Image 1 (cartoon, helix red, strand yellow):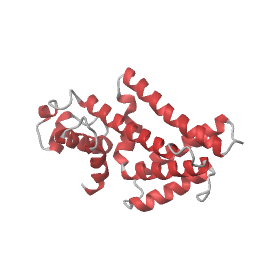
Image 2 (cartoon, rainbow, N blue to C red):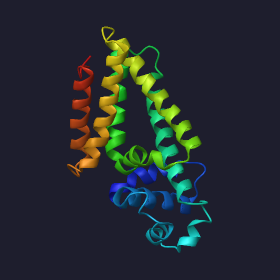
Image 3 (cartoon, rainbow, N blue to C red):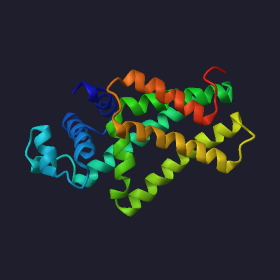
Image 4 (cartoon, rainbow, N blue to C red):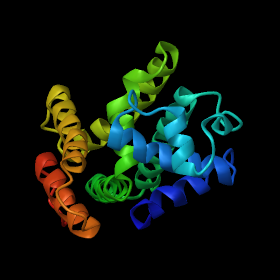
Length: 204
């Protein structure tokens, strides 16, 4: 369970989630990545948690509600990390961009299941939820694009969007490949590659 300690810590910070809900989310994230959302049943989640499948319904109305809670948690943490990097109005744009990349690379590597579930299973949600969450994702992307253009004003809007999309997709691809269990090394190398794509030197 050590590899899920960070996810468990994130889930435990959610005011809406009691202990049992946290365990359900933790195990569901693992199963959704290992087996896929479609091939994971409520009974599977219940067995992983140590309860009967029907007991899961005491905490969530269904599998889809669990998926929604996981994706909302991921987006909540992404918003917090982005805001933290941008909150210091006196910070130079380049330093803010590096801080944002630092945080994003660490968060992605330390929470592979949360990151991969959001990327792979968003389409499994009802249209209304999917549209709402996609708007939130676009807002996060806009913050990255705006900051990158501040750092590199020579970029066109399209070029900046391509760079940001490439960087975010890179994190997901690296995690999906399961290249190493050394989270520190993965984070360091992912950070370096993200900065290279953005053409933002590591040292301002």
